[in-house]
Image (cartoon, rainbow, N blue to C red; front, side, top):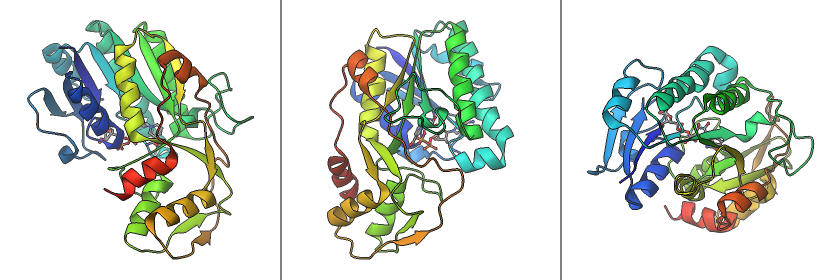
Length: 300
Ligand SMILES: NC(=O)c1ccc[n+]([C@@H]2O[C@H](COP(=O)([O-])OP(=O)(O)OC[C@H]3O[C@@H](n4cnc5c(N)ncnc54)[C@H](O)[C@@H]3O)[C@@H](O)[C@H]2O)c1
């Protein structure tokens, strides 16, 4: 039974990845400091072990020594763009130094593949849409900068890798804050019949990817012999925030009109990631449509 170390496994995406791996009979160990993740997101299961640890901590080596993982899935991160602006040191500590820590240990302990979560934020302001992997990387936030720096350390490390650049993920268990994904915020507001706000004119375009698809692609990345690739992961389908609101209003039976608030500073206007490369290399083409994913979310 292959063993997978999942950092950030108690978080929104990580906990879904852990569930998927356990369902495929992998043995899993999780490192998470529970800064945004929750212990209860993880199943109690004989094939999984949980370490309440910071990825920058000194005891990481003891965990590698004890567990000797075959694969590392690296999701632990400071994920807030706003926090990265107000505290770039903390962002760099986790996203860069924490990643280096894991890479060094992955080298020492001969990890077979290091699979990491990066972000559309590495591209900065799109020069064209959809954005493919050859688009220039000119991040406009410390978060984007820490993610592209992590990517470069991974490529230099010599450890076989796959890097996924995700668009906006949605689904159950997303950590709710001012900056959470728009779908999670609309979901909560509509379920509680609260007033929904839209920043700007709502004509900004986004692409969304269901968290269940992300869990699948990590599992496929482990099982596949594809190595040393950087892959966007997204549905390649853009939708405006206004269209999203109307779609969710219909699905949720929500009756109120939205309130429009001033545009948020530093937000990228439109973003759509091309998924041609991941479809070709990992043969993944069963993305949930947005309406299917929203139906799942609504029924939770
Ligand atoms: N959610 C999205 O839309 C999205 C989009 C692109 C990329 N990503 C990336 O996917 C990954 C997972 O994001 P998420 O949305 O599940 O966020 P999340 O906040 O739910 O998960 C991050 C997890 O990492 C843990 N963590 C944070 N700092 C840590 C540290 N120093 N040591 C140990 N654990 C730590 C948190 O407790 C949490 O469980 C991140 O790397 C994020 O940058 C997410």
